[in-house]
Length: 303
Image 1 (cartoon, rainbow, N blue to C red):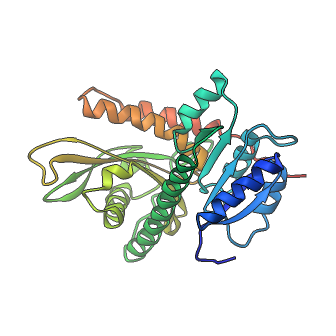
Image 2: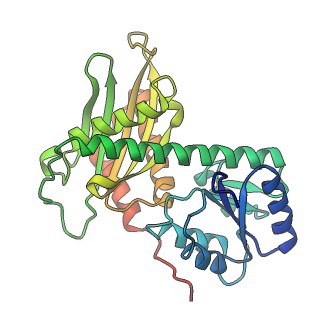
């Protein structure tokens, strides 16, 4: 098995489907590991030296179904950022709603076209690698800074969660426009961190493509936090790139891939209000995100 090839985990209780998927993916230059149930897959993940670059899972499986497997992976700090792709025949209204929440890259129904599957896998792995690059960029930037950690005055029963909005200015660079809690009430030097997160992302993607990145889940190792960045823009002829670029970001002690999917929907809602010049209250959306985080699925451990 070549370490230079992306590693994919495929989980399906139908061994014929599992075998065919393995052939298709290996022919496309991927390393493949397989499991016939979510329970088996979780045990394997907890013992692997190298975590997969993506997990592809069926939903209807005995003992631990795909949703339960997804919840368990998302609840494990070592595994929570691995991109996840559901490949399933389920098509009830409830499943379709979940698919829309997850997005087209996260939910593919059977029968599927080989080209669609490979394109989805390729896109998710590319974004995963970009986020890892940004992790390293942030680590280097923050190592050179003296970032002050304010004492927390947030209720001890609430996560130390910060929501911020940063605009790009052609002269001044990133400018913090809003944050909640405010800088003095947050556990982080949010102004410095917000600017550096924007800088790190643009250094990897480039300004002309940053809004196409849309969202990135990060591990901010230097301050022992996770970050979720959502980029967007609206037309502005006065700007160098013909658009006003901005970043909405959530920073918290724990942010799983599953959390990011739910947060993405809220930040898309905020972004639409920004682009259409509607009023929005940052505290209101901080509270909504806090509620989502408080409702996180419990960890499931294999027996």
